[in-house]
Image (cartoon, rainbow, N blue to C red; front, side):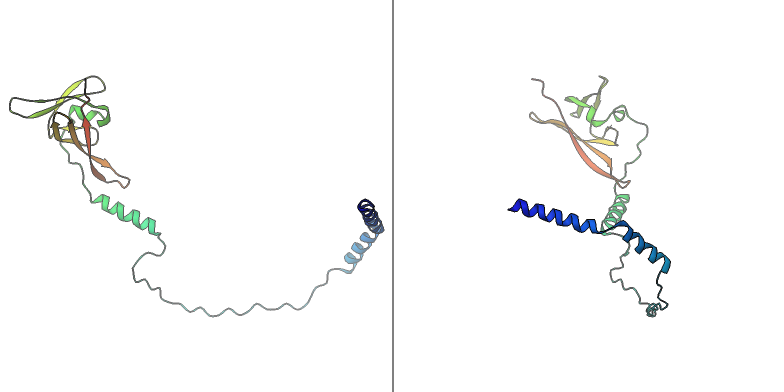
Length: 182
């Protein structure tokens, strides 16, 4: 039953479509072109634009309205960075300033006859240097600020001027641990 109904619907659709001829469509198009387009002679005018009334901009916080809050924060950080710490010039480079701090290793800590502590450092090219508190070290104007010769923790603390994203510097401390050679 369903199948015969479907067949009947298809045949009815075909009969309806067959009734439309191409010549009818063509004659309608020719009549439209012959009569020309229908133009309305009356055009409605545009509505009147109200007169502009200027108003003063009120800015109680004195903030630039065209600058985002994130950009204002970056500007504030940049201004703070430019007034931050700066490395001081100390003359010609000392030998340990030619090496990145991460490439140096502490191989020993010794005390001289006056009781002054010295760190013994090994460079990547297998040279050995000694340095004490106040010696310049590393490529970022680093300076040794503390040497610890304790039994459990033998280390050298270096304070460096690390560049920040705003053209300024910030002081950072790095601790170089002596490797135990058991």
